[in-house]
Image 1 (cartoon, rainbow, N blue to C red):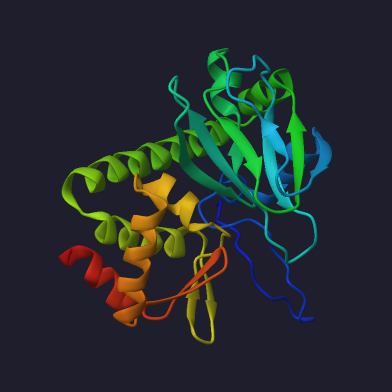
Image 2 (cartoon, rainbow, N blue to C red; image 1 turned 30 degrees about the vertical axis):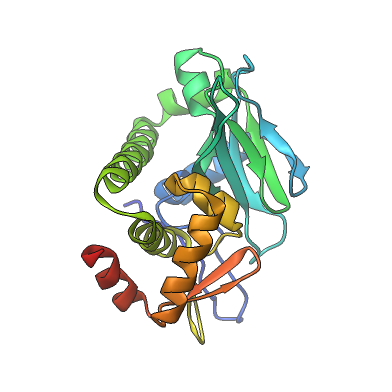
Length: 246
């Protein structure tokens, strides 16, 4: 039986797992994940490096890993409109699959993927990736589940934009980030990814100054503690309730 494998501590006190919950590699059986990684070519990218570029016609897929055991792998997915406006579509973390749309559909890349931290990228050619999926039909199910989750997230973002103001959209996306990528700390939950207020604004469709005002409101309510490119949610249950009321 397949189980999601997430970070934990083994009997020797060492961190024993690296895939974030709900990611593609976490949905595969352990031997399947190892087999797929064995087909890849590993390349290290530093923060700010571009993994994939919007419009390019490459067809390989990428699997994300942290550089160091117990570390964090993070990349952002952005798209630029014809008028030059850039939108932050989503965040990808350890265990995530990126670039699968071009591999499956043979279309130009729809977005740019940029490393937010140092990340180890396992590059798999289209031919090897499709061969792996043919060999393991349940891996197709994992691909489908990941794509369905991403569609659900995109639909929620559209609904949020229509139904909530900036502080409501910000609180809801912070809850989602904690639930998908967050880490428990002594003071609450860190959202698990490093994002500036400008990037958070691009994620929720708001100007940077509006995000700053919304963040100050949430801080005044005792719900968050913002830091440079980081946010700690001090009371997740209360923030979730606040998000539903706004």
